[in-house]
Length: 243
Length: 91
Ligand SMILES: [Zn+2]
Image (tube, rainbow over all chains, first blue to last red; front, side, top):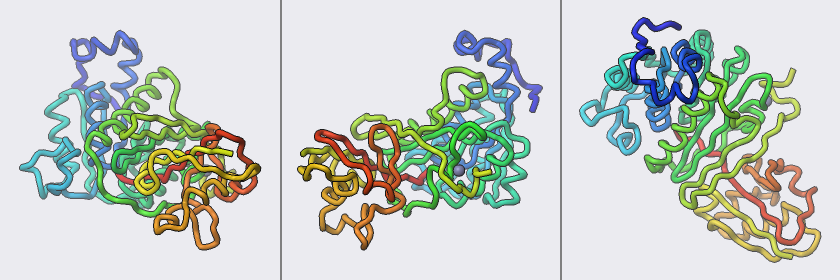
C-alpha cells in the first residue's frame, strides 16, 4: 500500500498535480490496483496508471505472449514471445516508471484466487478477454465493495462501464449471461481507446474528480467515431446484487 | 411510418451502420427489429426460431435499455431511432 520509491516532489507529476492537487497525487500513490489481464486493454490501462503514479499494480494473467498479440499488446516486445505476459509487463512497467511496484501473478482467475487478489486492491481494472473470468472476479469485487472498471473490445468497437458497489447496477445486471463469442479480430487502437478510458475512470475514482461512467454503458464505435451512452438498471432477482 | 435502426460491432457488419425501415403505424420495437433482421442468414444474430429478439442483444431506445422480452410492449413513433449492440468480450 505504501511505496518507498515514490518521488512525489520530482517534476514527473507536475503536469497533473495542477489538475488533481498534491492530495490527489498522494491518493494515487497510496492506491493498489488489480489489473486483470495483461493484453490489449491491460497494456494501455497499466501503462497510464503506472505513469500517473499509482503505488502498486497487481497484474494477473495466465497467458504466454504469442506473435498475434503484438498488434496491440505493447507491454510485450518481439523478443518476449513465449514468456509469461505478467513478467514481461512487470519488467516493461518498472523500467518505464521507477515509482511503481508491480506484482506479477501468472495464474488463471478462479473463485479462490479472485478473493485473494481482491483483498488488497482498492480498485479492479477488468481487462479480461472472457466473461467466465469476468463474472468470477466481478462477484468477488462486488461482495468486497471494490469498484470494478469493466471494458471489452472487438474489431473497431468497445464498451465500458464503472461498477461501483451499492451505487450502480452490477455486471450481471448488465450482462446476465455470457454473449456468444464473437470474432477475435481487433484493431490495436481500439484497445488503446478503451484501455485508456479505463485508466481515466480509475484516476477519477481515486481522486474524486469528475463523474464516473456508472449506471450507464459507454458504447464506442471507432468506424464512425460515435459514442453512445445506454442507461443501465438493476435487474430484478439479479443473483449477484439483489439483497 | 419510418424508423431508423443503427447497428454496432457484429450487427453493423451484418446489417450496415444505419438502416431505415417503413413499418405500419403502431409497430413495436420487436416489429422494427424483425423488419431489419429480414429472412437472410444473418437474421439469427438478432432473433431466435420463435422470432423473439435474442436475450443477449442490447436494444437501446431513447437512451435506455429495453429488455428483449419487453420489445413487444413499446410502440414506436415516426422517425424513432433504435440502436442495437452486441456485448463484446475481447480484451
Ligand atoms: Zn446485479
